[in-house]
Image (cartoon, rainbow, N blue to C red; front, side, top):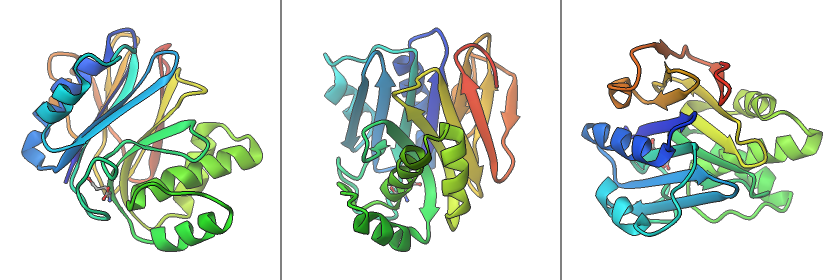
Length: 222
Ligand code: GLU
């Protein structure tokens, strides 16, 4: 198991994400990371506890009203800084957090490598974000459409959240056989593995169904 916390709205995303990841610590994990957008994308990740991530990030740019955070329980690739989430697409646009296992990642990776994709981690997750990025580039697709097509090619279990730095007004989330909840606030949304990170922010919660995709936007639309 691992933990997912993401935020989009008017508040500072970083403290909400860190607090939420700490509330999910009971699920177990070996590393933690965040990606925040504030004019540019900042990704910080670290093996160890959420507090190790917090120490690492101290003094760095953590501004931004949109962000995604993750605690990892390694299934593919050893627990280290590089394999920690979020992972970034080849085109540098997308970052993803993922809970679960992409069972057919090796086949997909082989095809992507043939097309010139370069991978930096040993994870199954990085394969998924490269695939989404490749589909997005190929046909100039909306992010949610590229996510939908990519997931139709995937065998396995996932809860994912994807942030596109070319369109940071929305987050795209999806799940299959791994939990993901959407918390609805006033012109803001929270995404999390369970409702505990949402306590104190909103009691309006939607549990995503298997194979459902959610698009949450900073203008309050869902
Ligand atoms: N399979 C992914 C990895 O090894 C995600 C593991 C998790 O659920 O934390 O990075």
